[in-house]
Structure formats: structure tokens, C-alpha cells
Length: 199
Image (cartoon, rainbow, N blue to C red; front, side, top):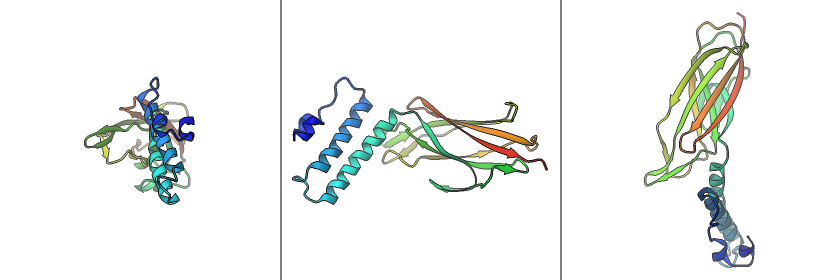
């Protein structure tokens, strides 16, 4: 950072020898972004500088995310899933009978593997449903093939069909979703409560 402020761009871009590869990639992108944003002499147009900085800083976010735990956000039981962030979640998770429901989840901090064909991610998932006594009443496991994209994914979501027994006792239940990042070797979990009402 001091090298960059001193105008010694090449020195600032040198890898940190003792740091892991992901940390080196983070700082490289971070410093490239800052250098692009500060270098008004090379790029006088402020909007162009900001655009270039945003690209590099976005890459830095992806890299630092790969060093973070896998996070499952916005877990929801839905009546419809259209795309990332476009769902129709139930207002209340209270149902008179069990039936198949779409389950939506957003993933953050997946590791993207760079290959000649693009960036790969691989996840394995399972869910378990427990009644109010802690007894498991349903479960399922899913293995997804490699997901390949031209750029590291920032809008990664999963959708599943939750299948429950036709007859379930009334009361509160908990669904626990577990997702394993098979490239990054890390696991994320999230839960959601729902109630089967007495008919």
C-alpha cells in the first residue's frame, strides 16, 4: 500500500511470498483496483478509472470469499422459483398437509476452479427434516455436476424439491440444508422452521 501511495506501482504488485495463493490473488486484484482508481495521469477520465477499478476490486472480493466459510443465504420454501433473487416465498410456513415444495438457497464464497473451459464449481447437497422431538422424518441427497461459467459466479443459487411423507404429525418441524463445496472442501448449513397444522 505504501509503495502504491509512493507511486512505485511495480513494487506494489510484487507477490507476498509467504502468503497462500488465494491471499496473493486477493492482494494483487485489490492493489490493481486501487492503482487504477488513483492513476489519473494514465486514465484522466474518472468514470473509466472507476470502471477499471470496479472490475479488479470485484475479482478481489471473489478471491477473499474463497478463503471464507461457505454461507447459505435467503433459504426459503417457495411456490415458485424463477431465477436468482426472483422467487415467490410463502408468507407463512404453516401448512395443512405435506406436499412437495421448492426450496431456494443462495450460496456465497464458493471456490471457483479456473480451467481452459471456464470457471468450475461443484457442490453436493442434502437436507434433513426433523419433528419437534428431534426425530428425523425425511431426508434426501443431491449431487450436482460441475457448473461452468465464463466468469466466477457471484449469483449462485440452488433449488431443490423437498419431498415429505404424505402423513406427518401436526406440529413444528425443522428443515436443515447442508451444502458441501467439493472444490473448496468446506461446508455450509442453514435451517428453516415450518409447521404442519392439525386438520
